[in-house]
Each structure stands twice: as structure tokens, then as C-alpha cells.
Length: 152
Image (tube, rainbow, N blue to C red):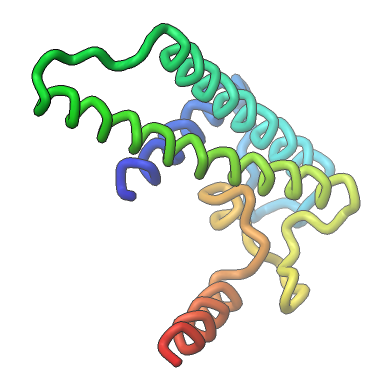
């Protein structure tokens, strides 16, 4: 699970670098102004493009041929690696849906605002997790409620 999260972080960092812009949203400007919205739109689109590219590479590797390791231990290790890779791609498929949702929220003027409280999510949180839909406090409360319902 940690490897998958690190993969997501690496892809997001790559997307940020590929923007090629010196601009970074700052607290000294109006929250969710046009320049910030355009920054996040480009970031989300680049992130999606990077995920799709990684998925295409995985698909190509799968099409190149099945695993033909002669040693049973090597074969089991290779199959485990592929299983992890496919789970990572499934997580990223779900992430693409969240990216598409964030792009829709930008178009509708809802991006950057908590879906629970209506308060600003915050630039630092959005830079770290551009698909965030809740403030840190609302997310923590949501996770506590989720944990309590699971424990019942």
C-alpha cells in the first residue's frame, strides 16, 4: 500500500514539474482566483496524462507476453509483482475519476471549497492533494465517523 501511495506522489510531483511554470498559488492573493484555478486545471490535466501514460506502459508490458519463469519461486515473485502493479493501476483508475470530478468542480466554480462546510479547503492542502473535497478538519471528522461505523 505504501508503494502505491508513493507511486501516486511521484506521478503528482512529475506533473508539477512538467507544468514548466514559475507560478505557484500563494496566500497573498485572492483565494481561487482565475490564475489559481488555471494552475490547478493544468496540474490536474498533467497528472491525469501521467497516470494514463503509466497505465499504457503497464498494458504494453502485459501484452508483450506472459510470465515464463522456469523456477517456481521466481514465477511466484513475478506474479506477486504483477499483482501489485495491477492493484496500483486500479487505484489510479479510481484517481482519474476523482481528477475528472475536480475538473468539473473547477468548471462549476466549486473547486477549492469544502463540500461539507463550504469553507476554503486551503492552498497547501490542494497543492498536496489537488483532488481534495474537504478541509482537513472535515476529513478527519468523516474518517472518525467511518471508523466508528466500522467498529459497530
